[in-house]
Length: 105
Length: 280
Image (cartoon, rainbow over all chains, first blue to last red):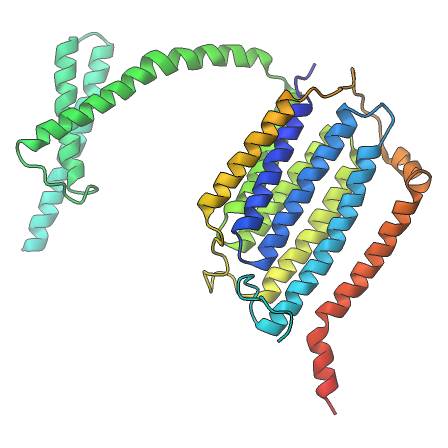
């Protein structure tokens, strides 16, 4: 019998969340910040599916349904975010988030 | 002439360094095979440390002002530190490591090893994403993070989310991120763009606090666990759930995706639109 339980997955999810937050906080590149957000969403998904497996009633799939919605919204967020980054780059010729503090040219 | 003399001095220091190392190791071996008494071993190792300190002083310490009298004192201090470390390793850590390894091997299962492999892959990929200075290395490290998380999904009996993770994250979002990196700025040309913004110490402190809090909560909270979680294929159940219980969120998500894609196309096509307007 395996000794892996719910806390193992929660710890992995917590580590992923912390590393994603470090990425968001320490990067100046806008694409890097979006990558950190993707890591945070992955950490949330790990928690959803772990709770679905260990806590939810057998046969119920609420956590997995939520994880699918999170993946869908992450895809939409990546498309919109990277499009905005490209638009900012075409306007300012940089994607340093410290220098792009205007919404106009 | 001066060059050859410095070269010779360096070679002499190197020779003394190696002689000190040999003396240290040889005395230790001789003591282990009980051919040399303890006082003689300590004396020989002291002189070995002195030789190492004198030899290293020429190379790495940028020539500490060690004269004929301070050298033995400094060597004695270094020898004491090394002796304490050796004593600690031999008499405290060694038995503890052997004991804990003996207990640990009895507990290891193959399934656990697979879990730890996936968990290490995911966390190491995320760490590479967080701490790599080159953003394209961060993107490639994210590949390992996504694949490790997909493996964890399989481990949890979630087959459909695992496949969706590989298809959407690895096949879609990661490729999109690589496109955005390559379309925006040449990597490595401007170090400011890949530099730390708030500073790594602040980020590391934040991470340590977050990991500590979440780990404490994950271990200490009284979760209402299922007695025996089973493994069933989840695709059919997910399809039924999407079309009955979660029908409205499902439709809203599809509308959100459509709106997001149209909006992304409109936002990213800005420059091309301007150039077509200026054309006669």
